[in-house]
Image 1: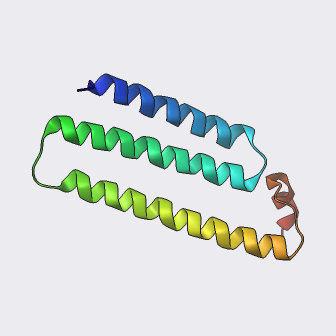
Image 2: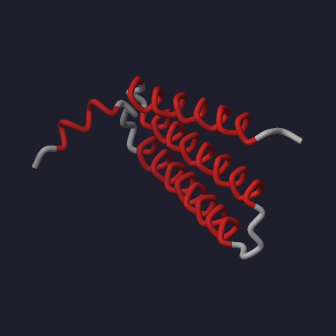
Length: 102
């Protein structure tokens, strides 16, 4: 059985990759995928902590399902945005959002 420390290392590594992807990328799809990595890292840490705490009340399972639901809705919004932006022939560069000033 793996120790909790290994899951923490994996979670923190995914967190670092996700944060680096958000900071370094200009492409909107890569930014949203980096946010997905942040969701996954939190799910891994929460699931590992809950399994080692051995609580039988199910609060951690409900929290994991809520985070997965948020991640799934994030992907659905990303697909819808991609289709709308692609149909208009626009670019996916985040720096172009500064042109949206009203």
